Image (cartoon, rainbow, N blue to C red; front, side):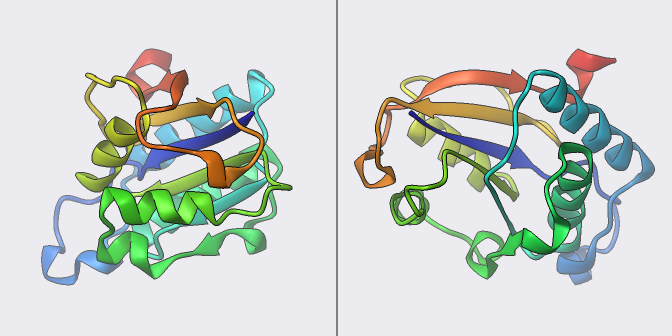
Amino acid sequence: MKRIFIVRHAKSVPYGYDDDFNRDLRERGKKDARLVSKELLKKGIMADAMISSPAVRAIKTARIFAENMGFKKKNIQEMEEIYEGLTTSEFLDIIKKLPDRLRTVFFFGHNPEFHYFTSYLLKSYNNEMPTCATIGIDFSVNKWQEVEARSGAQAIRIIPKMLK
């Protein structure tokens, strides 16, 4: 089995759209990221890899998750394409190229793309994807190359509101 987590960045400042890349997390966003990542740890979920958009709000969310889940922050891979925009099939291609030694991979990024990716990978997904939404998707495969669209099963869905 292979599992990915799609994590929308935590709540960011509502201003700075003229410099969108550098928008920071709000205090609430930092708290939400800590809350969700600690809940994952309580459930015994660990990351073999973390891949993030390099935008400030996404990479800071990833770093909070890493810190709380015992993953080395320096090992978070930044992927420009996540910020710049990927099609659903391009995102699937990234998944298919993951090393098979990895079992659980976290992706950190942005809507609307992350909502599209989740809908594309799951057999069915009809939920919203608010900030810091974290969706775990299981694939009954042994190799990442075998992952196909709409073949995933939702393993877990955590949004900060559920934990407050």
